[in-house]
Length: 318
Image 1: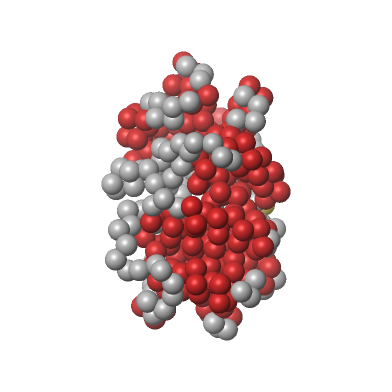
Image 2 (image 1 turned 45 degrees about the horizontal axis):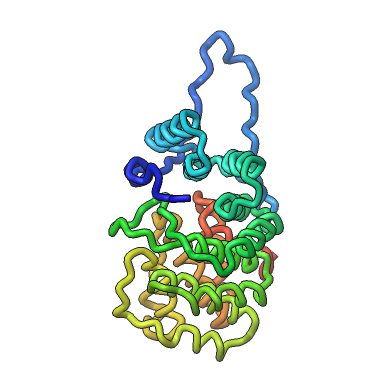
């Protein structure tokens, strides 16, 4: 199936798919203000036992979701269902997104695109065994087949998708293993992703997680070799923070020059997590703990850096 269907419209929608932190819903009118408001259902439970709630989407993000939902309802194709699920997640409703993909799998059993996206969202809600099951199955279904470029939900500045079905399946599978603390399997998956990467953006993202998996296994020499060929002059178009981290790992960039932006967003969370991990590897556990705590207290609880900090904190410090 051609995944570029409706891409022009969706590209425009994704450019403005942003979040705000204000609560959803209008205030009750005066005649029912005495009623006890219904408590919102939580989306997930963190690795530290905290309930995690939906961050309300901006009006624009909600309008984008409404548009994609209408498109799906008018033409309920598999492709439109996938985009409906993606924009539902972009609006912060990860459980709703999983429900959409589950409905899709009832109609299209073992579709690898649905497994790839549902697996991703199981990671968002910290259900790692379910994520691994989906992503391992999806990976087995596409093994040896021609790869397909995957349009980005949030396009980069160049407007060039860097990922594909196979690379995104592998990336998220490796991440699920990493978050679970199964570094043997995350190293296996990310080592393969780094070896087969067909652009430098894929290379630096997979190498970052590969390096960290190896360091957690105590295979420091292999880790050093993994980042040895990452250079400062690579033409990165999206994964700038992963590139920076690889340059930190191989000694090109000193840690003193690495800063953590308080308004970092999800990409900056990944950078902060990598810096925290670097301090942990280097024996400065107090600094690592401080950075991890700062990430855990941040608002973007579905970012990979936030989830990784939370998982690592639970494994090391709790």
